[in-house]
Image (cartoon, rainbow, N blue to C red; front, side):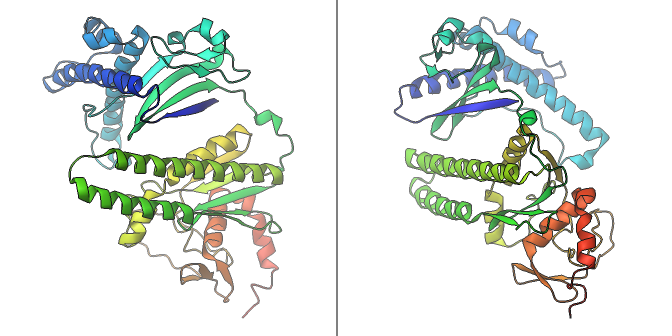
Length: 407
C-alpha cells in the first residue's frame, strides 16, 4: 500500500518560484505534445505513444529544460490520457448507460501542470545522507525515519490555487495481519449525510450508534461562499492573491477535518473489533439533485466521495473489509418493520410503498408509531442491503421486541 507525505508551499516560500517555473515548463511541453496528438486525431492520423513522443520532442526547448526522466513522465501523462480516452470510447459504444455523455478527446492544460520525479530522478547518495533531493531542483526534504530508498516511489509537485503541494509517495508495509483482535461477528454500516457527515450503526444492538458531525464543513463552506462572492465582486474577472488564500484555507480545513474524522472512526472500529463495514453511495448522486437551492449547494460542496475514499483505504490498511454499495430506498424503508428494500431501476415504473414514514427532518416513524432517528434507520437499511448475512441477526431481535406489539 502507498502512503503520501505532503508539504504545502505557499507564496513567499523558498521553493515557490521553482515550483511555479517547473510546472509552467511542464504545461508547455504537455501542450506542445497535445497539439501534435490532436492534429493527428482530428485529421485522421494516429495519435502517438510515449516512445514516439519522446523521439519527436527530444530537441524541444521545454524538454531540455526538464530532467530527462521528468520530461518523459510529462509525455507519458499525455499518452496515457489518450489511451484512457480510447478505452472510455470503446466502453461507451458497448454500454452508453455507464456514462453521462460521450467521452471527449483530451484537451489542453490552461495553467500549470503536474510534475513527477520518479525513483530514478532522485539522488540515492543524498538519500543515504538523510535528504530527498529531486534531480536539478533546490528541493530538500528530510527522509522519514526507517524509509528505504527502494520504498520511495516518486516525488510530485502538484499545482493548487495560489500554492503548491510537494507529495512524497512511498510504499508502506501491510498492517492487516497486525490486527488479530477483530471480532468476526461484528459488522458496521455507514450512512453518509449533510448535518451528520456519517451515521454509523452496528449489528450488535448493545453498541450505541455513532454520529460524525458534518456542520463544521457546512459552516466553512458558507463562509467560503460569502467571502468569494464578496471579493469576486471587486475584481469582476480573474483571480487575486486574497481569493487564492481563501480557497487554500478552505481546502486545508476540509482535508484536515476529513482526515481527523476518518482517523477517529478507524480507531473506534479497532477498539470495538469491527471486521466488515458497509457504506452507502449512489452513483452520480450529486448530478441530478432536487433538494432545494440551499441544500443542493451545501450537499454538493461536501466531498463525500473523498471522505469514503479516505475511510476505505484506512480501514483496508488495518485489515477491515469495506464494501461500498448503492443505497436506493434505504431512507424510505422501515428498519423496525423489516421492509423489503428494492433497488432503483429507471426503467421500472413501479411505485413502492413502505410501512413507515419520515417526519420532520430527523425522525422516522414505524408502522406502530415507534420513532427512530432517520439517519440511523437509513444506516441499518444500508447494512441489511449490502451485508444481509451480517445484519439478519437483528431481525430475530426485532421480532421478540415490544416494538412490534406497541400501539
